[in-house]
Length: 406
Image 1 (cartoon, rainbow, N blue to C red):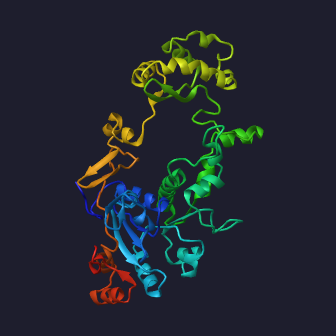
Image 2: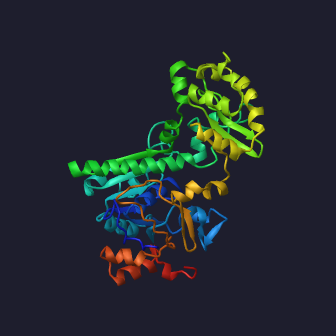
């Protein structure tokens, strides 16, 4: 069932969130909060969140699939915060807000009269989540940063790709997405502490911090002995065999985490002598002789279909899986069993990855048009019809009712 924004129970029912963010990390964080019951108001600038145009595919006029899957379950208003009257409206909204999420360029809020200390003074219980690329100070403080830029700067690209190929970005915006999850976690920490102190605080999330935090185990290796990690393709730098192999009908990933699993692998592949080979007896041995080990295993894997091998390996306690494409992954039986794909009328998206037993997420699949809830939200904030009409007429706010394509 599709639930309209603001009518949802859940672990965060009653929490008021103002989402001023755009693109990915901030909107994803706000969507996680909405999925678990928070009443989220997304505030878009007159130009809109740029990801509305990040298509094709588009699911509606001015709404890309990219935008849809980051902004469900939120009310939507359009306010020009660069105008003094728009900031008066923001003041009204903040008075009833528990959590503010924003990713403005460093200094923007301060220029508008909302420096950190001013927010603390005027809204002492507010949890303020700020998402930036590099932070607001230091040598690169205030620099803009998209996911791939931070993958490059934070070292992730250097360890991604084939050993003899160029550095590659991870194929999903992992830095943005994990930053959104860390922001979600930080907000929950701040809200928990607020129960004790009565005070909000700044949750300071940067894409740089996230990218560097994702470097394990490469960061651990360099910090231990100073060796700069190299690219290893899909192989693991400190575990072997832990790699993708070509089965008879497609790629198969095999992950062997201990010597017992390696012995079982050699049994399944009918090459038991490898388990007693001095080059491969222990994991450090196998890592040191990874190329030779791969050459020994490739022929045995290539002779069998991947479904057959997967069944045999997993039955022996060896983690293994066909390398699925996106379509195969999203239609896989276990993915469907877990309810990870949400289908509701025309809406198709992914479920919340946070699963609670007693207060589960309830996905409100409606994605609102820009300004669809402007009048309702402003009226709830105390503005009368005349004031709202005046703000619309002056272009400070926009209501979907004033748009031909709404």
